[in-house]
Each structure stands twice: as C-alpha cells, then as structure tokens.
Length: 356
Image (cartoon, rainbow, N blue to C red; front, top):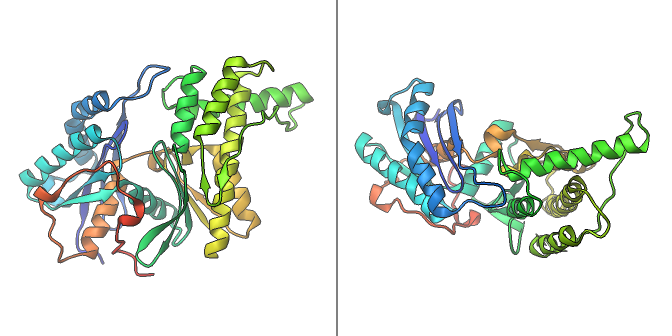
C-alpha cells in the first residue's frame, strides 16, 4: 500500500498545458487540458506558446483541484515536466509549480516527459512489460525496460514522426485544429472511402493509389526528413494529379510501416509479445490497426490509449512523480533544484519504482 495519496501533475512541454490529479492507487480524479492552436500553415512558436500556458495555468490548477474534490492539504506532491520539450513553455509551467510547492509546502518532483507517457500507458492499459513505441511531435523511440531503465532500441535520426506530419499538413493547408495529425488521418480516410466507392460502389474494401515514397529504415532507426522533402516536392509538382487525401494516405501508410518494422524487430530481439503505443501520434487509428495486426501475427497484443491519455496531459506527470516519490522515501526534493532542460533522454532516468 502506497503511503502518499494524491499528486498534482503539471505538463507544458509543447503546445498543450495539462493539469491533473491522480491518487496513489492510480485513480484519475481530474485531467484538464488546454491547447494552443496556431493559424493554418504555421507552427507554434516558443514565446507565444509560453504566453498561452501562463494565461491558463492558474485556472487549470484551481479547476483540477475542484473537479478532484480535494484541497492542497491533501497533496503528497506536485509533479512537473522537467523535459524534454520547448524551453519557454517548460519554464512557464515550472515557475508556477515551484511557487505552488513553496506556498503549499509539498515536495516538488521533476518528471521526464517520455517516461511519463510510458507509465501512463502502463497504468491505463494494465500491460506489465511491453515493448513501447513512443511517437509524438517531438519524439520517436522504440523502448523496452531492462535493469532499472527504459532502454532505447531504435529512434528517429532526424525529425520526429509527429513533426513530419505537422509540417506536411502545413504544405497542403490543413488546419491545426484540433491537431494537424488528426486532420491528416481524416483526409486519409477520405481517400479510402473514395477508392471504395469508385472501385465497386457496393462498399467492399478497396485501397487508393499508393504514391511511391522513400522508405528509410536504417537498422533499428528511422529517418523522416528526406521523406518529408520528397513529398513536399511531389505536392508542388503533382504531375500525376494526386488529391490531398491520396497524399495523406500514402504518407501515413509509409511512415507507419516503417514504425511497425522497427517495433517488430525490437519485440523479436527482446522476446516480448506485447507492444504499448504511447504519445500523441499513438491516437491514430490506422497506426493502431497496423500495430494490432503485427502483434496479433506474433501471438501478442497491441495496447493503445485514446486521446485523453496518449496526448500530453497532467495526469501522466502526476502519476509518474507520485510513484517515484513513494519508491524513494528518503530522497529530498528541493525546490531550488527544480530546473528544466530541453534535452532529457528517456534512458537517463533511473526507474526506481520497478523491480522486475
């Protein structure tokens, strides 16, 4: 039985600010989030994103405590994202977390954003020891737990998969609301629907034209920058008169196949049957389908979460901070040590709360 009861988690490493309350039993009492949405054709800049977070963080903290029906006196700790992420947004949330920790006299636990995604996925799905595919706007990694760390077996050697999708969405003029990746997914579905109707008219499955795109897997690593440059040029020339849905479909199929390949190779190497998909891109239903098929063929299962937990949220930070706090009862968390960093590797974190 864990001693500490409640944790307030604060996340703000990118364009989403999330605040949540979680109990030591893993019960999610509140999970609130606000997203900074930039105009179509643009990305989110650090200064503007930080201003957005500062404008909403206090109201979110108040609302999270109200929804959870607890007071600051009930908190065992406050957990915040130390990194990785964008400097200004990280700092804007950390400043608030430090102030609250001093005001309420509770420990302030710094949390690795990537590890928090993994632990939230394990909590929500119940899968104990999977291979993890972590795919988001800033990270693309294949990991597995070994000897008190999450070891990285493969990763992107340039840009993250979510960054590739976001930048492609700007090229074809898709909205950033609710997210570029979601709108690419919707367009890809339109291509499948159009191909199905055009092929037979009776609703039987049919597939769109698959544009030949670079497929860049280098051992256990992947690369997306060349693929992005290629499809950007293809969109601008478009001699074959492909539609936007067809471009979105081809991009998804290609990059997700690359991710499935390196994930399956990691599963074979580690002799694990199950895979856990976390991170914002993990919400994509097509990626989930492909992972489920691959894992099923290996006699295992793919574990995925919905947008409440795969997208950046405060609960994942709160939960990870709480299980670390309870696994290190003698550790002293000082507010003056609570810093931020843009670069914070997943395998830098000593996983004290697992002994398997």
